[in-house]
Length: 394
Image (cartoon, rainbow, N blue to C red; front, side):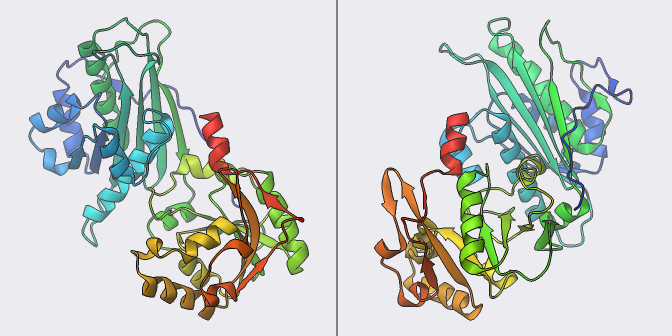
């Protein structure tokens, strides 16, 4: 089994050089000269860093784009889906990955310049009282690693202008992290305040998935031909996943593997920190495939002849034209591709919002129903979801 990357908590390394230049000009010149191309996304707090970057000549050498999705609607549009919390480390990482993907789209084929997505989401002093902490979460996404930095500010100890300046300096330091520049601006932190940093370095196979040099990678277990596959985000993995795999193995007469796609149709790619956490939930004896296959048509092409183990809600989505641009013809074409790939589905009952959904209740196109097999509800029903668990935790 490939070694799982571990999150590292770096200290202030001796190769970091702190400068006292109040206007940060010397640092920004180094950023422009570093050769890394960056997309920067800031939700508001810390956005003064954009003006500072562009005030120093040479910004086009380092900055591909700077965007400020200030409203909740704008951030949702940038990410492709609504975050559970608009100011959190997880959201900062999602922003950085979305920014990194944009950087890749803006880069011409054959351009080998290093790319990075840099993000900051902050909750600072405002014109109305805040019940939560004043804080900033920063993230950097590159091809090789995911870096995060979180800073909790002493509430009421600074004006909004002072908090803004501190976070803007932190953004420039995050840019330095992204560009491999050792220079840092010193942060005027108060007693008890500390920038909490972590980094997850990706193995080469994960980097190949990001760049689409490969679309599959067997992370653990056996890469032998598959009989059954249980796809999921596993964020987090729970007992229903384990029981579905156990029952699937029993009903199908063979081992069940798991599949985790880094790509989702309406979200940024899974960052390395998140991926490491999800992968750690599987033992070395369990077969786990990592893919770049967000749809079942793409999964079927990668794993022809496999039986997919799914909930009834998933089969319902496969049959709904709204997921195909409201085109019945496109929906039917996708189902034809599933049938051509000899895909089959073992379908478990699922409870959503207090209502039970089973295969028998669904109005499916005949071609799709013909490749589905129901697990009797008296044998198993799934009343838990990763989304519900995540919401309770957050």
